[in-house]
Structures are given as structure tokens and as C-alpha cells.
Image (cartoon, rainbow, N blue to C red; front, top):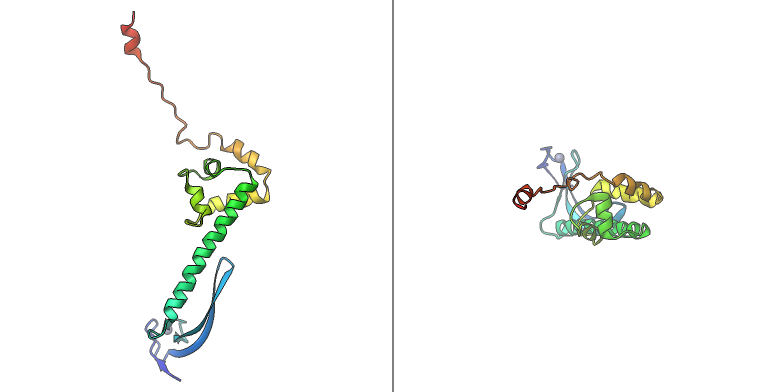
Length: 163
Ligand SMILES: [Zn+2]
């Protein structure tokens, strides 16, 4: 058996060589299988180094990237489905639940950005208990103080000069 010292934990003869291995990686319940991987694995610490003269590292990384994109799209589709179920526009959803830019929600729905966890949780709660939407609207009134202050400019000078 081919062995060599582990570059990570330093175990002598810790790493053994493998070929033709299949691995399955999963992200948020979705899976991708990558076959025919070759490299070294440490029996002590579990560190893996893919063989540089194969495309193992490239294919493993690509599968992970694909999964992350697929997961974002899956969540985006879920956000869209719930929003439509609640009869809200993207703009109304942002104003009611998350704040932020007016096109933030369309970016979530297209899977470009992962929504904040709190927003995902709120959407899933409203999916399960849609009757709470009315409460959310009532409780949301005045909850955002960022634009709550109104300024009135007093034109005293004008009134003084008019006579
Ligand atoms: Zn090791």
C-alpha cells in the first residue's frame, strides 16, 4: 500500500492513496455524485488531497459550486411560490418583511442572492400560517422608524414680511 506523511497533521505514513472512489456531496437536501476520484487520504485526521495529475479536484469543486447555485434557485422558487400564495408583490414583500432595496426580492427569487435567514423564516411561517399576514401588516405599522420623522419647515420670515 502506498503511504506518505500527512501534510496536515504530520502523521508518518498517515496518508494512503486511493483511486476510482465515488463520493456524494449534499447541500440543503440536494445531492451530486462524483465518480472516479483519485488522491490521498489521512487515516488519522481525514485530510484529503486530490491527485494533481487528474481532474478530481476540478470536478469535485465544480459539483459543489453547481449544488450551491441549485440550492439558491430552489430557495428562490420557494420564496416566489410563497409570495404569490400571499398575493403580495415583490415590493410589498420587501416593505412588509425585510426592508432593503426595491429589487432585493427579485434578486432572491432569481437565485442571485440567498435571502437573509430571518426573511426565509418569516416567509415559511406565513406559508404555514397565511392568516398571520393580517397580523404582520398590523404589527408592521410604525415598526420601521427610519422614515417615521416628519419635518415641517416654518416660514416665519415670510409671515413677518407679509403685511
Ligand atoms: Zn493527517
